[in-house]
Image (cartoon, rainbow, N blue to C red; front, side, top):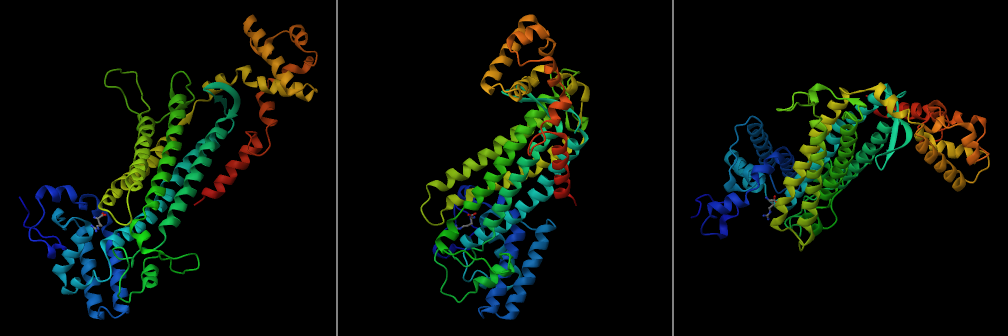
Length: 468
Ligand code: ARG
């Protein structure tokens, strides 16, 4: 069974492809979202062809107007995508053909191989910018507000999910702001990698026609900080390079891991066992069976979505690893994973910001948890160090005190002075003063530590960075 539709490459073929093959090989169902970029590229390409004398001015104008009207049809939902025309590029070209005979000249000196590479680079530039400005900055802002409001609330910090040392809620949340700042950096790096124009590389070996690649690059905004055009340096690399896809998916996957870790912390904090945080009704759900439940579904889904973002990265690495140069049709499969990472990460960042904005800390539960004197066992060892005891010995002494307290079933700071001084003579009358949270925080005022002045410094620094 073969279709009566003939694709634009049909010259050498006597029959069209099987209907099954059309369904199998089309990409328009997902690459149609590249339409605005494809039109932009075609306009720049046509303008260049006019400039070098391959098209007349009239032909250039007809193509320009025709492309605008095709895009308008697409935007207004009038456009009929046809899988027999395979992809967004051929659908648009075909539609243009119906509007102007000059359309037959548009594909001069270009191939879909350099065309799709260029469209995607434009997509990545927008996607990176949107993820940073509409996603990461909003999440950082919500974290900062929560941190600012909770700067006086202390909680236990955990290692191995065991109570370790006291930290402030603000310090804990600021840790995530740092992680998201690194995500921003990675996305901006991907933006930079995308900012090189492949158009003019042709199918593999450029063209014999006298094109002006720098002009096209400038038209499309592929320029460096000085405004100089950036064009790819090797046509074979340009049509088969998918590094920026991988870099983008990697940046999304790592950001997803950060979101997932934050989600996990919040899920723990939201449990009855911790009770540190209250989540807004608007981002939680109930159980269809158990009437008492208020589940942190938004956080659980965020944790789940991160698996998907990692999968997309893995898909791309595997897709590219065994391909000989240059373009191979396998590469058509490069788009769904990056589109998915973009959509899911954008959504995830929005949901995270929304949930955090409606969340509030439960100061009573936090105070109760952080009152555990064992959290200051290390500070007691430091106290002994200050009295001249070598740290290894001090560590051992405090270990003995902890064991004794356990034995006597009393809190560490309620051991009797005689018992304590029997273990080490350096534990003099003032040893209990260690067990003050205010003191513990006030002694942690060096860079990166959770002392109150350091926290203020960091909150102010981020306020300044995130303003507007
Ligand atoms: N639909 C193709 C893709 O997404 C466009 C490039 C096709 N090039 C080719 N020579 N078949 O990769």
